[in-house]
Image 1 (cartoon, rainbow, N blue to C red):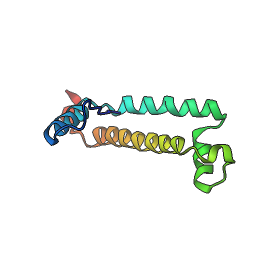
Image 2 (image 1 turned 180 degrees about the vertical axis):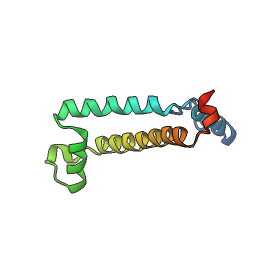
Image 3 (image 1 turned 90 degrees about the vertical axis):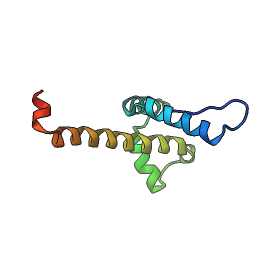
Image 4 (image 1 turned 45 degrees about the vertical axis):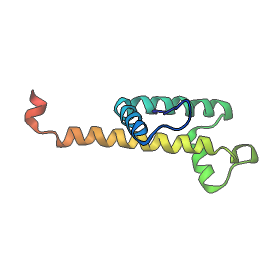
Length: 105
């Protein structure tokens, strides 16, 4: 996921727009998904629980005190699921809606 860092204070509006456009151009959702997957794995190893199980309990408020504060884990899981859904949708759209003559080429 692209991160913008500015030294010496806030950039001008134009500088910010340019940096944002460059970051978005370089962004790769597959890389984002892999990074999120690694983050989730770290939580799973640390707490000995699958992310899916954690998130279901988190949503219901059924976690013990040690895990109830893990908003970062919940946020990472939500981001992972959203990014995965976007990638799957893009792949399906490409496979289903791409003209047949493009596929044969």
